[in-house]
Image 1 (tube, each protein chain N blue to C red):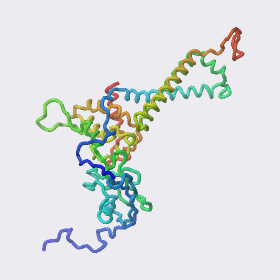
Image 2: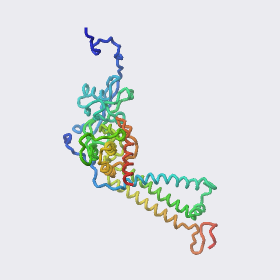
Image 3: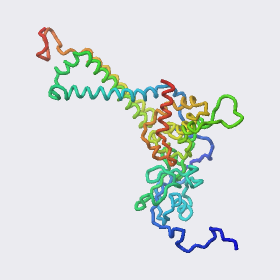
Length: 257
Length: 155
């Protein structure tokens, strides 16, 4: 007789499954805003029983699916890849899908707000267009002179390593919306745009580095960075954002002086 | 209550206030950034030598009086030293406050006013300071009468 695949074998309770997942009660406070109802934002609060494996996103889902369907937030992949659900959780910018509830202080209410510095459209949804406008301005695409090669553009492992850190960006806006300089008037290009410029400036295959440096030499470019490190701390991908900005500053200087 | 219209997604509209004014190119911000680093490093030396000579060396803090300052400014080395200190610290400080105004003022008109006050006071202090360093006379003689100190030569 053929053996059953492992997934179909009945397991005794407590064997291999790690047993019962612990549950705990949390208070979730969400900053609500609906311009069609009121110009004022307010806090809504829910008591929820959540599992030890749950993330903030699961708590938001529980609210939306079981308590109040009008709660609005962006999320797509729910696994920290798409960068849709950046929000301010307990005063820090994080991805709701990467923040486990058990890692937060569950004895106090968990505060969830939209990211700062961008116009709020509804609840946790902000207008990302200014953010993407800055991103577009730094030309986030390969620009190469000369004839197109018939095969792939070769690059050594060291050359690839030069900009490896900044390839990790998922455009979630956690860095830009954590930057106090961006909060003031939204004119600053912001860390995310500079990180994505860095990704191409230091790419050996790209020929438009000078143009990007010129764009970021702007009054609202890299020189507005005050190295407060909020961006590096906020980045859910662990990109050393402030370091990347400093490298771009260096590149502008060594090119000019 | 008027219902605000919410633009459809991807309409490409950037909220007013976020669009950057073009034509702000130029290297001024880069030079200012570089100046802050260089002048900062030089100021550390200038300030600590200044503090040591004035407050620690010789009679220390009790040695400071009009004669002490007069003696220092009789020496061209200290004249140049104090002049550099004055200019670098004033420009360093002014640029620092200019940057803070840029970061914290939200309206362009507020920025303009604050910077106007800042630049005016900087010019007044720098001009006045420079004038004092170079025209300082420890023994002013007015109408043939020597003033201030007893160490001055008889007129």
